[in-house]
Image 1 (cartoon, helix red, strand yellow):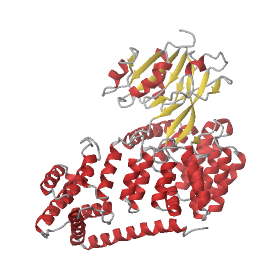
Image 2 (cartoon, one colour):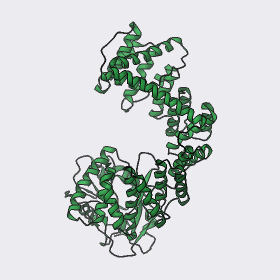
Image 3 (cartoon, helix red, strand yellow):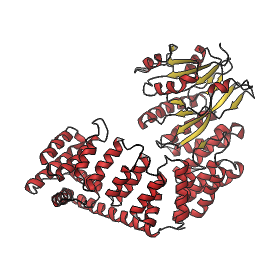
Length: 582
């Protein structure tokens, strides 16, 4: 066993989608990789064998600890690093080798784990997990599910700032599959150990993640009230989840009461102050919300021992402060908070929407675009797409197009090209529509929508034969057959005049979807015939919606009402009119 050597140990099963990224992130920081496969039926084992010859099979018996301890028994390094296949070591967050060679007394380290809460970058929960420990026989996992390292001696575990473990944000189907698997195992484990409060806490976590806060609430309350601060690694998240569960159930006053009480006991726990501010905000008590959110900002990142939702002391607090300031009619402070939220997390998109409306109301549409460009808010594709969509909804497709044309860093992405195709359609540049949309691959999920937009551009250009060809391509997907029928009707309408056809709910819904997308405004076409065809297309879609059923006419009226409300909302921002200034 070489001094300061590190063995990465993993248990895997059907992780071909995740395993390689994990191994790539860790292979330069460890001396040995030990992988235990518990029964994969995909390419997991073949991927593992490309990175190590230390791959072992282990018959799965619904016991995570047994499999992990088997992997530890195969390791030859002085230290063990334990990871899951859907986790990665973040480069630049801490030198693993330096940590194990310090010669300090700790035999084990708690490492920070970042668990994303959404797809948006920077939105994650931070936990501490014991994943790095000496391979001396004293550290073994315990527990069939949500297994933990058992520590018997005091003073042997320390907290490290890094390396950081990053848990991938899995697709919802995969997350739910694992949640349901965990739920079955946790119920079984709780039946075997009914007094194990940690198992009951983990059961609550799964219920909350599955959208069942009413099931999670009593378990979180029990965990918080039963545990002491000696178990703050569990008590702190139990408290936070307790408040979140109450909020999800609409029990705002009860949640606020808990926040006010525990804030005195945990004055450095930023998340409590943030959550209390959000609860007051949702009760329209904006003055109180501002006080608590400002307190969250003053505290910043809490001590590592607390489970922490990243951003509660920075960009999330600034965003909600901006919203509350808006509701109070304080437009300039609101703008500053939104700007600070964006500065603190350049990938956080939500403040962009509010800031855009405020700046547009103050400067006007075109000057607002110049302002956003000067501040660099259009330099990333995600922010530029968000602002462009706002301009489009406000009736400025030309300015929406300019937003994306000014996007410098990611202008080649297919989503940008798709949006540029749409905005060129509505600003009357029909040839550019085809130029952008023809570059999007058939494998892209947007491809059916690409075909619909191309068909409309071809209709406006008078190329009815090409439109029919695209319509029949769409017909191959049953989901788009109502749209295909509409396109074919529009072809006949433009060529020969309207021919009545019996309409059904599928046609009604498809026509309403097209009308909702195209927003009821006339592009500034340079050619009169294009403008005339566009009017015919809109008339045709409205006719299909109205003739389908009485519900179709009502739904069409509802679309007009939504459009009118959108205009009203824009005017409210422009003139500083807000309905609630509690």
